[in-house]
Length: 120
Image (cartoon, rainbow, N blue to C red; front, top):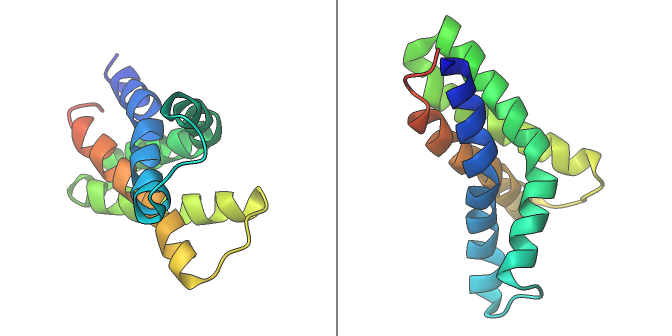
């Protein structure tokens, strides 16, 4: 039952947090969004579920093997997962965008990992 908590936290919270990080750069920096918030949220769930579940698996593995490094390790794993996933789906980007894409994985993963700290 405790493992379900981790999956639930990552499934429900990871995509909206990815959206928040995305909107921070794209919409707030540009001043205007191209889609409505509801459309953005739908796309966030569509795109971010695979990285969310992979990050949950990394968090679970770290909670079993290296519990003291779980949050930091999950952040690093999610950073790499996000960058590789973006490359696989066809995004070509330079260094500033690699950092932004990586943070779109690392920040939500850290929050979700911290919230699921009691799950084994």
